[in-house]
Length: 282
Image (cartoon, rainbow, N blue to C red; front, side, top):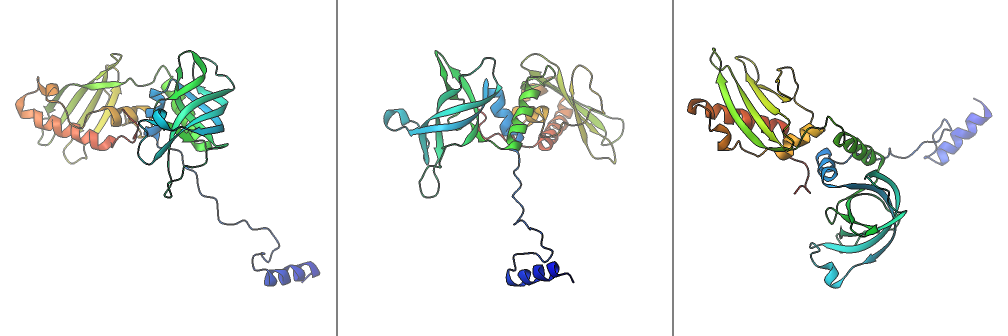
């Protein structure tokens, strides 16, 4: 054993925190920072003309009439913030902006410290005040983290793409066609969209197989079109814009004997796409 190894081993006995091999050991692994819920981010992005990366410079509490409407357990502040980046917006912002924000109080009834806090703001401009913005919701912010920044930028890029799925207004006509074998059949549901782009759902039933579904953005529905991932704009559109039940108006032209099958298949799709994960959706 070398003299260096002996000394290292001795210190390891005296100071248990020191590994015997003399190498520095870090503490517990840092907690993994997850990206915010995709549906929530998408709901904010679609409603916000401006998405801003900003760092809080100063705050002032708002009281009196200007604090009217503050939710219980919250406190309103006027914030000055330095603009780091304009993630979404058609015109430049000044280096510093101001806005109002409602922040939740902690268990002791105290507001969190906002100083030097880096935030992602979802906002709109204020007419005649280039240095002021209005949050689309009094709490429409996210704490800046690398995963949050990446998710927001990805959603903004996808939302501005010419291939972005359209807003779903309501289900249109729906019908079910039974197959030649017992338990066989298919349901097609046409969806009304804000810009008139054809969107339809297809549900297939095959004897001895699990029920399957697909969605088409166009006039042709292909069986091979896979259901969209939850963390996608189309997944968001379906989860957050389809009603819970198929309206009776969608079945007006459907044979009475097949209407129940169409409802069941629509319910199947709703279960598959899941619930909307955007608590700020209006």
